[in-house]
Image (cartoon, rainbow, N blue to C red; front, side):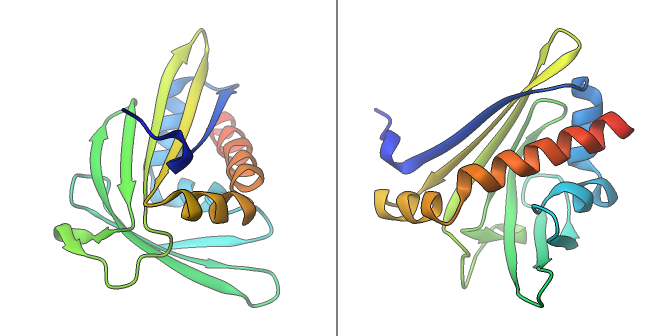
Length: 155
């Protein structure tokens, strides 16, 4: 049984073919262009898109604020699914300081010449999901989905 109070989800139809959405998602130089809502910037210091691979991103804001998200890729199905968690770091090692304690599943499916993009974020507790929503999950993840679409369309 699924506990929906632990999950936050966005679903979008991106105006780009799945192959280009995948390319924008799976290439370090492209993902850095859309990962954070602008004017924030993302710099990946580890990006190995394979099970057990590193996912380390330094995010910086326009006023010098910032934070780092470190995690691990759990599963990759090319052009279809990416599963990530910040509860582990590369090589399946437990994360010493998870940013949010989440697992996220990103899926891509053909929708004609466009792409159905779903981003699901699972939390340890309903309180953590609520806090993430209040931090701006929906606004932020919708914004980065739009930025992902723009990068994919430019490829």
